[in-house]
Length: 299
Image 1 (cartoon, one colour):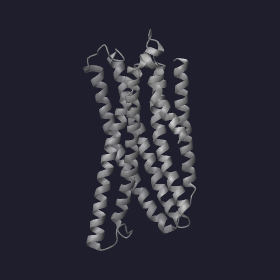
Image 2: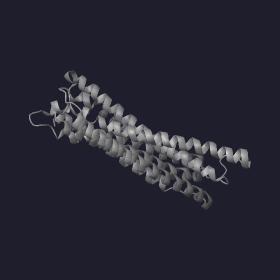
Image 3: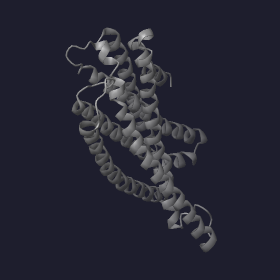
Image 4: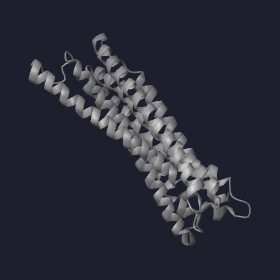
């Protein structure tokens, strides 16, 4: 690893870790706020239990599918794909190992980003409602900081995943290949990271969206049309399912979706940097990650 490469990767990783640490600080601040009255806590606890149960079941299914797809990728790249001169690694089994490992890492990271987004959301909701009983400013501060936790965590995890994976693979340069030459191959080896993140985000966003809309329509039909009670009335049990859907769809699904978007766009920009390597060297490859790292610090 060259000095320039090491310096840029240090900036990327340090910025990611600092953003994660700040997200933890904000989360601790939000969790220290009041949870309101016992009646509010009762409804909030029901929403938490429903959201966590749904996400646990969904992630079990997505996890099983991810393992199957990873196995198919490994078998396809390792035994059935013909090696070409443009491949970053000439040994097909080694190529398959890189692609499969990066796919699984991307899938796990995307799932974690979605879960953290939902976990923070269902605990911020009641604290915002409780703060609104006494101060509009406190409610706004709580809501903004709760949302900032998910935003910072998602972007920092994506940046740390891509940058950390690049840094790790930089130490596995084949014998006879310089660090600069190997750096041009790494972006093609971590494409699986974006694929894994997209795979999880696809099911999380679709599953959560379908659940959300089904619960919303069902609650409205039963409550307003049949029972004649107002919308989002806690006396309607279907309202709890509706609120659970808002959290798992708009928070967990959205978190995984934004994670894969940032990961995929960074990897794609790094591949463009490889095409411009003659003009900008390693700086062109790591430029997208450095810009995002500086953006995190500015945020």
